Length: 526
Image (cartoon, rainbow, N blue to C red; front, side, top):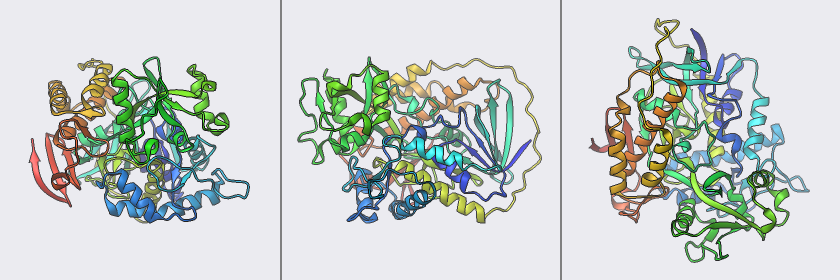
């Protein structure tokens, strides 16, 4: 039995911020399915949003966040996080001297889509995530043990205490290990890999959401998937993210004939909310056009965007031509495991932070560069709570090992089929007919009926989790009969404030779907 005070599953910015801020007398263990740096946070280019500029303030940031989230946001969560943002940036700046500054030593502030002010803070140009993660890793102390290539796959629930007490995991050789913790934290990111085009790391397959769902936790807002407008698109595949900051610096979206595509679509044109820009690009591509980012207006592009330059060169894009081919792809999950602001779920002892969690901060569509901010906030607040509430919890007698079981073969279609069907039926544009088709197909596979995972390989369990997460997204998208933020229904193309504003779709295992309005359940759909 491997016992810990705090057991963290995942290694992104939320996980590492939490680990580094916990008191040093705590025994902390981080489980990560791949390498420590193989996470979405490490790939993040855009930056961190905080209202620290002259003329800016958190109330403006608040307004922009609600507008991008189409007023589906939890306003209390938005206020708390955005009011804390300047302090979080100040602390990091004082401790790590991380951020890009001008000649006078002032933090440089960039502009990104749907922001009304320059408030995006960068580290190393377009390598913000990498630099923040490197900084947090450098602050890991001896009381924190990192277990790489360790795939967590099943939460352990003590039904007497009605509490999560640990997790089962598999090492690379398939050996089953059991880890126990007074507190168990899911920080596994979102689920971008269930779509064929995505900016997400290969490891981001919805594991935390699926594990929490299987354990009986409440899952919220799964219909809201953000598609990033500009992924590098070459030979029919997406090759990496082209940051929002490129458009913030003056790049515009054009067709293969050089026609600007955002003229007359939104007042902010190329810097409009992501769902509008993604939808516009998608429509042009569906009608047979190629779409490019025209970067001719940006001086010293290669110096300003070294990471993007490297991605383009690696994939044979000649930047001297001034155009980068792009397509929209899955980028961020606004939904996830339902939590409060510090990460408490509906199961005692189980927490979720970062993209795995749904706090209501992002509403129906995340405002650019609010994601690393959320991870930093939740990691800090949860550490403060745990440092005060550190009473030991009794763990019932449990087996110290799991006997070897004969490995089974997977019964599901290849995940590439799932990805293609998700893009066609539950992608940017959705309809009742396509959603029902996908929902029926997924239900016939009976993935939610599984109760035993020990005998499956890591790859097969990961596939199962992808199918479970896809089902949660599909069912939620079918229930929400309106278009809002990252959820667009062609058969319900408008927002329906009368029936849907502030209403949240919450899913629990065994087919329970409830519609929650101000914490009052008003309907149940089976």
